[in-house]
Length: 104
Image (cartoon, rainbow, N blue to C red):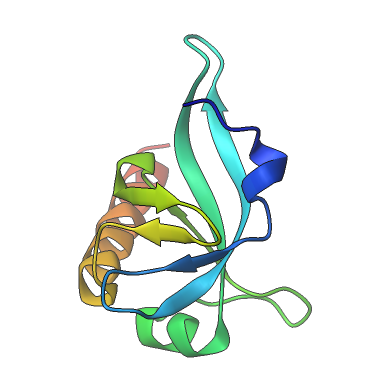
C-alpha cells in the first residue's frame, strides 16, 4: 500500500504497550533509491524525559526511528516496539551519530 506523507503527518505515534510517544512530523528519504530511511517523531514531554532527549527552549525534542519499527497506520501510527525497546534504539542511534561526528 502506498501512503502520502501528508496523510500521516501530525498523527499520534504509539508503542505496543499503549504509550503515546508523540506525533509524526517528517521523514528522511534516500534519494539514490527513493526509499524512506527514517521517520521523525516530535516527542511528548513525558516520553522525552524518559528517553533523555533534549529539545530547545522553543522546540520539542525530535527523534528518528527506522520505518521497520512501524506496525500499522490507521487513526494513529502504531509502532511494533514497546517504549523500553524504543529507548534502546534511540540510545543506539545517538551512539552511532556521536561516533560518526568524532571521525570528522
